Image (tube, rainbow, N blue to C red; front, side, top):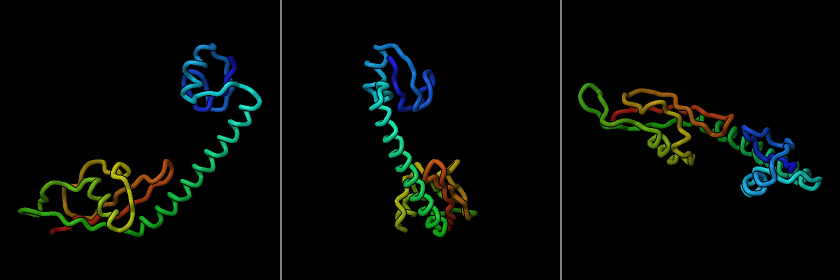
Length: 147
C-alpha cells in the first residue's frame, strides 16, 4: 500500500514522502495514529494544505516569541533571599523563583523554559537564558540580593 508520511519516521522516511508499506502496518498503525495518509491525489492536496497551515502556525509562534524576547530582555528580576554569616544564602534560587518574579512583571513564563544549569547559591548578578521557541531565546538579568 502506498502512503504519504505526515511525520518523519526513522525507519520509513521524511514527512511528505510517498512510501510503500504492508497493508496491515498502514491500516493498523500508521493511519490511526495520524502518521500517514493513503496516497491518493485528494490526500496529496490535503497534506499540502496541512503542511502550509503548520508552517504558518510555526511562523506566527516564532514572530510572537521574537517580540516577547525583546520585551523580556529589557526586564530584570530582583530576588531577595535570606542570608547567614559571610553572605551565604539559605537554600537556592531556582527556575521556579525566576518564573514567579517574571510573572509579577506580567511575563507568563513556564519554569521549564528557564534554563538554569544548576540553582543559584550565591549573591550576585546572573544572566539567565529563557527558551521561548525552538529557535528563539531571551536573556534576563537576575539580581540575587540580601533580604
